[in-house]
Structure formats: structure tokens, C-alpha cells
Length: 343
Image 1: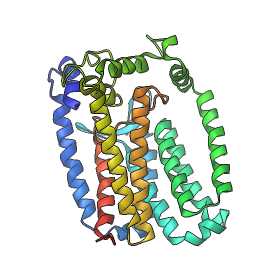
Image 2 (image 1 turned 90 degrees about the vertical axis):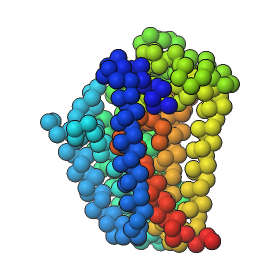
Image 3 (image 1 turned 120 degrees about the vertical axis):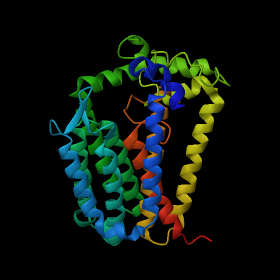
Image 4 (image 1 turned 180 degrees about the vertical axis):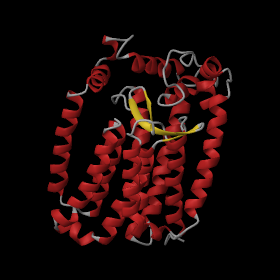
């Protein structure tokens, strides 16, 4: 699908229709090597290294904001560039944050249920610092995804409902402020509410995405036969690859993708359920929830039921660091499954 969605654009820009496919194959190989490497050690070793991982993620998030170190694209400074490889530190930060929250829950399980200051506030502080650093890039979509998962993990761990509701309301207020004080975020919201009000401007991506999905019908136009990838739909091989799947493979293709993600989530939840300890339970739970939420957001944006967010479709969209760290996350889940109590 990456080749199909990107070949015309790659030929026009780089004079090589397989440009993105070749790079993605390298990313897949690096991701698989990383996944199997993560599977090879005892995941319990991460429990005592959680704070170090978080501090490393903070350092990387700070460095990416420094001019001449971090790379700026379209007004966002989110990437390190190493030759033909780009590294997005926010992808590493979600792994580090989940490891920290899982470690904290496993060590402070009683305090989480009884004390706001000692059992809840430390996690809010760590996730808050991470969120601020990511927002400075800026990247609201990633902040929303990782904090939603942190709250879900804390809720399942037994944090009092009143604390969850309080943080949820505060988050809504902060979200309102972030949207109201940013022109491009307001434009995204207005485009989501009524994309046809400005179909050639603010609502262009959503309109073109809906056209792609609508033209696909039940069986699609056929693999490689998309019209929208002919410079109509921006980011066809990245954020909106689901729309190209819908146009070329139809409703059956998009439903197949959705079923695969549902199966991934269910298998991940089984691994979490049969984990031998609390750390493994919440580690696998957090990673599966992040991957599932990223998929839901990406698909929701492509279908026009959620405002536009810059989140790729896990394992399918073109992208190096997102694919590699998603596979690292799967490696951690499989690592937990090695110690599963289920026979």
C-alpha cells in the first residue's frame, strides 16, 4: 500500500517511484531487529530502569527543540536527521512513559488507591513534563494519545474515580485553551465540523479523504488504481493511507484492516491478563492501548469523524521511527508473553 500510495509522488519528486518503498523496507528490517532484540532479555530488568528511560526521553525531547540539532518541517520541530533516517523522540517517549507508569503501579499499588499525593501525583508530574516537551514541538495528537492511555492504566489500577474525573476536567480545560490560542488548531476544528464550508482550503484534506473512501465502494477500484493519490490527497502514504486503502480495496479492505487491529488488541489483552506479575500486566496493557488508540484516531480522521491529527496508522503508514518503536512495543508485549502463565 505504501508503494501504491506513494509511487506517483515519489517519481515526480525523487525520480524514483520506489523511493519510499525502499526506505520502508529498511525501516521494517530495523524494526524487526529491534523487536527481536527487545524480546531477548528479561523484561523485568526495565522495572528498575524506568526513571532512567524517562529522563533519556526528556533529554531527547529537549535536544530536538534546539536549532541545528532538531529538524523543522512545516513549522514543527519533531525530528532528528541521520543521513536518510529520521528519528522522532516522541515515539520513544511513549514507550518510556508506559514503562514508568507500569513500574510505578507495580511498586505503589496500594498507595495509588489511597493517596493522591504519593500514589497519583508523581505519575501526573512525569506525564505532565513529557506532555509539555512534546507540545513545544508542537504535537497535540501524541500528547492526547499517551495521556489518555496513562489515565486508563491508572483507572484500571484502582485510582479513585473522583481523581480521574478531576484530571479529565482539567485536561478538557487545557485542551480548550490550547485550541483557542492556536490558529492552525482552530482551523482544524472548524474544518472538521464543516469541511465543505472551505473544500479547497481548510477542509481540503478531509473532503479528499471522504471522496477516496466513497469512490472505493464495496470492492474498490483495484490495487494501484487510486485517483486521489494523483496529487489530490496530501499525505496519501502517511497520515491518510487508510483512505487510499478504502479507494483501492473498498469496504472489504478497510474492514480487513480494522479486524486485524481488533485481533491485535484482543491478543494483547490476553497476554496482559495472563502476565505473571503486575508490571508485565500494565506494560503490555499500556502498549496495546497506545497502538489501538493511534489506529482509532488515524482511521477516525480519515473517515472524518475526528479532527485531523498527525498520527500515522501503526504498521501501515510510511514512517521510520513510528514503525520501529511500534515494533519495539510489540517486542515488549511478546517478551511478557514468554513468561505467560497460560499454558
